[in-house]
Image 1 (spheres, rainbow, N blue to C red):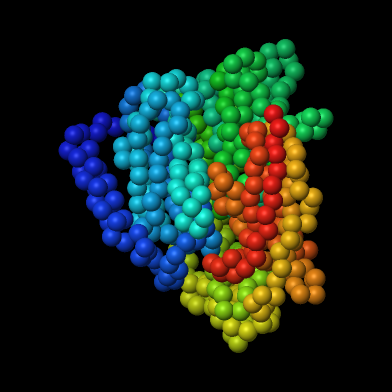
Image 2: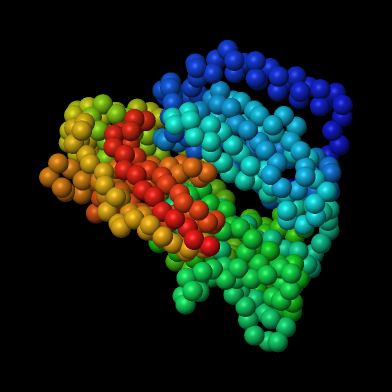
Length: 481
């Protein structure tokens, strides 16, 4: 977060002309997408996910433009950038405005707009990211930006009021919980963000009175963002921790971070250790003194290469993109390292220099990535087309309540009923971003269904073969107040 800048009339004119040019370009090439990178993105409708890149949780004066634009990236099921895709930005709370309201993604799948805050005070400003799903025509709200009115970058020392803790993750467990423990005025301690076993609900706290701390954003799926705010800091020790609630995967240090802000000023960014326990203590505030883990030393050599997805299940004729993360001994991701790729069975699946595998015949294969003599391997199983089946195996939670966490489970099997591990299953539900999951060793995947509001909802699970949908299973449920 940086200070608010003044925007001149010529600058606004250039932006307006650029926005007009983008919409004119859309009219000429909306049906002719241009792919970035070496692997072309197939033309035609396809499910997408919209990720927040930056510009979320900013602070600025009321009725002034924020210092940074709100920026998103649009990707397909394989995580590849989608260019020439129209994204809409809409103010839904706070009374502010956006400059253009719509933008087309560039070659990297990114689009941005500029946000002027309204007169509303406190944490009440919202901008939604909307688009029409090209595969279904459904209207979708993919993400929500938030902002707070106030003076950015005020020289507020740690120990003062208005501290915000922001947890974000883009890979790893489906559900991480940001938890804050701290002192009450009577000498007892409070807990915000933790599950109450008796009620099955989350302790949300309150910022309008004691304990003067609240969880004002909760997420239950990837990509996730959770925030906890302390509006009045009392003497004693505050402890922030991250709990791996779903425990369906380990925390990925390269895709997870916790940021601590004081009235819009970033105090510290903290990443998880290489081996993260189920409950990771992120930092403590001891009577205003910030205590955090030491940052990993820079310049370390390659200690480990992690290749994902593994295991993978791919249909003959489809493609599978593998990714390799190069890490040092502390678990930090190393950038700019040369990676080479190799297939153990090129007759079954080839792999190119970008990690894209092409399934040729049925069989098993290992895909290996090597950086500076250190290798990592993913396993893959290539199966004939039409030989995989998808079913919803958990009983549909036909009725639940707001704030509950019902689980939906699906299973992928072969013609003999044997489980298939590493199959990609996408979950689509109106108003929520597409969620991509991979089956485990039992051929199963599970998600927490959203229950943030009352109503009747439905969705579908899709078994994917590259970018094509192989099988579909549907579900429905009702959320009661």
